[in-house]
Length: 85
Picture 1: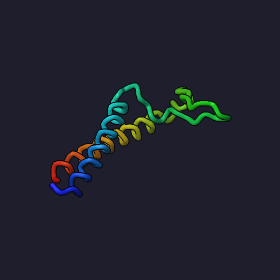
Picture 2: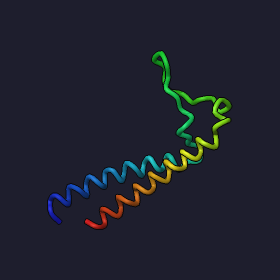
Picture 3: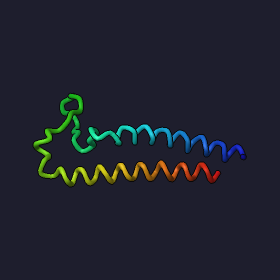
Picture 4: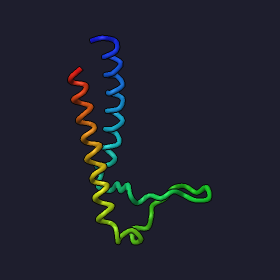
């Protein structure tokens, strides 16, 4: 393995570990990405009222699932890249 390949593997591995950490959070059924909103006037971010979002909950769930699938696909892609090096 060349130095360049080694550095590429290190970079891919760092990205892979970061994505695995994020996926671990996303894989929790209690994690809802769509329900957060920015704080205002210097206040911290907070959860939106679920009742306010209930008319579009199916749309939000669909997009959350798409994000989960994309992260999982990226993890698999990086694993494949590393194995090919």
